[in-house]
Length: 270
Image (cartoon, rainbow, N blue to C red; front, side, top):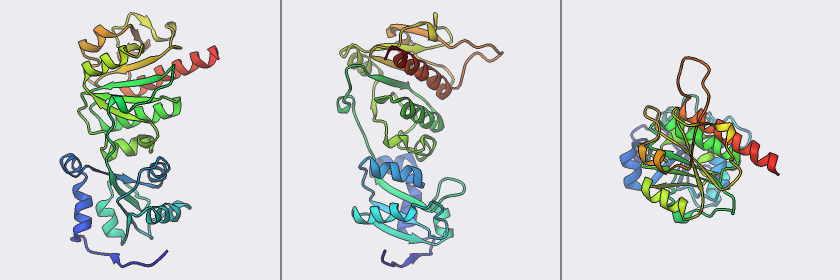
């Protein structure tokens, strides 16, 4: 690996540009996103995402394969920039950074970009507000083998660095599309996909319904749950039994519970 000059100034224009990309408005204007950390960058590269820029700090590199990520980025044509620790920590958006931070084109998919099997398992997330919850949903979706996550009427940016961090890189392993609610309902109906709505007001226990066919698990906002639009259109309205005093689970946790019940039923069916 050739030795380049190390950036040591916090006022460097490239450093200031990377810091600016923490803001949603800047990311959307530039059509770029930040990807930090070995796990996330290695999965991004494996998915075919080409980095525009990769910053690294030799004093912070903690993963044994960090240099492989750097060299792959260089070979793919990315601008590779070394910084000192103070500059890197200025750009980093996580505590205890591992010395790798990339800038990449923002991935944006629509419904028609999704390619489904004959018996898909999907997640629809309506207006999820917190980046950490959306990232956790993606992480569970990856683990459960979900074919796509559709984010409807989003209030958080799917390319928020904290979505990528919370997903541990699943942002790059699970196709994620953005669409309006009514558009998504029509698209799913046209493909014969059953809508399962999770709500404390659901009429049936989630484990007592058949989840083995083409299915979209629909979850809503942290505070209000699903809107009437989705509750009215859902074929299945289910609840997760709550034995304590709290009346609902965190949206990401509820999604994981429902996904693994679908996985359990599908495995049992063979």
